[in-house]
Image (cartoon, rainbow, N blue to C red):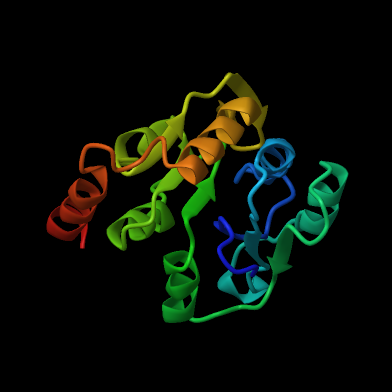
Amino acid sequence: VPTNAFVPVMSFGNYASDDRKGVDVAALAYSDFCRSYTQPSYLYIRAVTINASIGHRMAASLPVESMFRAAGVPSGRYVVDTVERDYAESLEVVALADVLLHPSRSEGFGMLVLEAQHIGVPVITTRRGAMKDYTMHGVSVKPVQREWLNIGYVATPDVHGVAEALRGVANGTCCDLNGEKQRAIDVVTNSMS
């Protein structure tokens, strides 16, 4: 990672080809962000293929590297890490980030979003379901519409909104302007841990 770079992190289990986690949105938004952000930035993508032994029927995983390349993200501005890490190591990666990028189309609970905020890392999410309620330190981007996936109707994340949220976090014009960071830490600590 370049020294003094703005570092967003995206982390997900890469076990389904329906892109419920919004990887395509992250790729397009980060590409947009890179075109206008002149300082160094480096997106760290944890895309771990979950072991089939957990009992789920595994679909084909997403071609993450290809998605970011096709979106026009400059080489050298991101890395895709597929190494399975233990819980502590995974959380260390998030703790080193400037923001957790999580533009999910559908999210049951979003434990990683809560964990990131608990350690003081702002999050960028899609304003739907639990993410709407639990994004306290960061930006919850309004979806543009709903779309159908094999699990039902889900939110369609707003690529431009996610790119704007990245710019806001990178430029310091959002997040923790009114004590949101400490409020998020307190809520997660006192209510959810």
